[in-house]
Image (cartoon, rainbow, N blue to C red; front, side, top):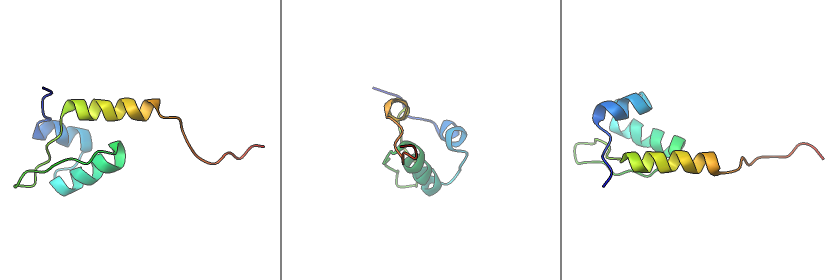
Length: 68
């Protein structure tokens, strides 16, 4: 079982203190939908973060092709 990020690790990763802001950050930067505890703190594992990073590196860049 993968370990959960501590509150300090999550703060260091996101640079944000509030749980709602951390959820938005994780969704925007890593495409993760993470659960929150009753007190609003985010719960996410290192495996989820590492898989999201690997997925983003493996995905080809998409966008408009301006050359003909």
